[in-house]
Structure formats: C-alpha cells, structure tokens
Length: 253
Image 1: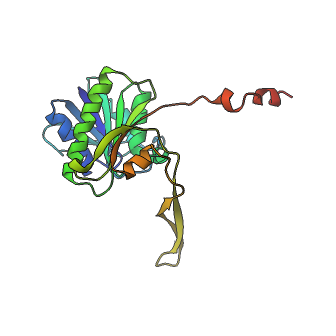
Image 2: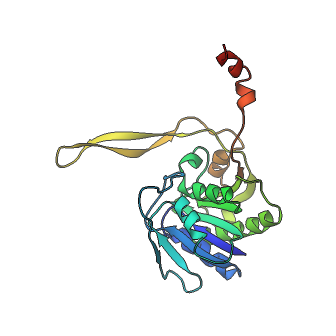
Image 3: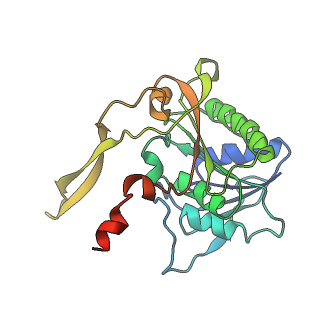
C-alpha cells in the first residue's frame, strides 16, 4: 500500500521514524509528512493566517520525508499533494503517550487520523505510553500494520478512524488486544500560577490526577491493566431527536 505517515510530536520524533521504517521494511510505499516542531495537544487546528513551508528532510534513505511548519491536520492536507499517487492509508504516530478517553479531543495525533478520514482516506492513530523502548515501538508498529491490512479489506464508515494504544511494557508482558469503548473519564490538569525572574505572573499547565475512576472495559481502564486497545472513533453523533425532542416546538411559541 501507499501510506502517508504523520504525527504530532514532530518529524524527528523516534515514534514516527520507527513506524515509517517498519512500514517500509514490510514492503509498503511510505511518504512522511510531519510537523517541523512539536505539535502535541493542538487538536484539530488548521493554519489559516500563516504561510506553510515544506522542506524535505533526509531522515531515512528508504522513504521521502517532509517537514511542514504547521499542525498535524495541515500535514495531512499538504501531504496528499506531495505525491502523484493517491494514498491508500494514513498512519498517525507513534505518539509518545497514549491517546485514550477524553485525550482524543486534544490530541494532534488523533486529529490527523480524523482529518484523513474526513478526506476519504482510511486512517489510524497509534500511541504508546511514555518511556517506551524501541523494541516496544517496533512491536506496536507491526501490530498496526496487521490492523491496517484488516481495515483495508473491510472499509470503515466515513469520519471513522481506528485508534490503537499500547502500554509501555515488554512485548511478552502486554496483555491481549481488546476492542474497547472510549472512556468518559478525564484528567484534572491545573494551570498553576507562577512568577518569572522579572516578577511577571504566568501560568503553567501541570499534570493532574484522574477526576474519576475509568469505567470498566473502556480504553483507559484496559490500558492501565496492561492491554493493547483498539477503538473505532466515529464522526458526528446525531442525538438531536434523542435529547431534545420538543425543543423546536418550545421555541416556536
């Protein structure tokens, strides 16, 4: 397959290099189009008021790689223009840190996969817990390719992407893969007020604690238990008639 590989950690991140190399070694045609700088937690942001520059980078002799001074979503859109051959699949990752639960709203990794899905390009976001070794990343990349082949033969609905996450455990200690719903639990990250050396007040986001225990069987809970998880993240959920059946009638009066 002809694969577009991107991420939100930047073109020089170890995760994207591992993913692209494993895909190329498996016989796939790979093109890397990734942010020139770290773009974590940028969500589904597009660059609309700045020019975007594309520079080819020699990160590996087996595939072309392009650094783009934009967001992961920008990289997906521009990446499609960097080759004459249409892509068959988009892989976003391997992210340094899992993207589960409400993290999906913030994640640039997930946003890139979502953008590809919006453009009718099957896609997968791939993430692993921090402090992962190269051996762990390689195993995850291999698993991602197996899932990609499966999905390619059984297309997902439009606006749906696959979200693959793994714990940072030795491959022989990772528990079986589970297809999971997405947890609604979230983290209470706090902006802490500080004073810089010039006496100016500023705020810094510090890691928080989970507000509530993750629901049993969800992606968050199973990652914490050592499982690799797969979730299929859909697009719009049209709950208008479910939640507000009489709102139009009310507003007409």
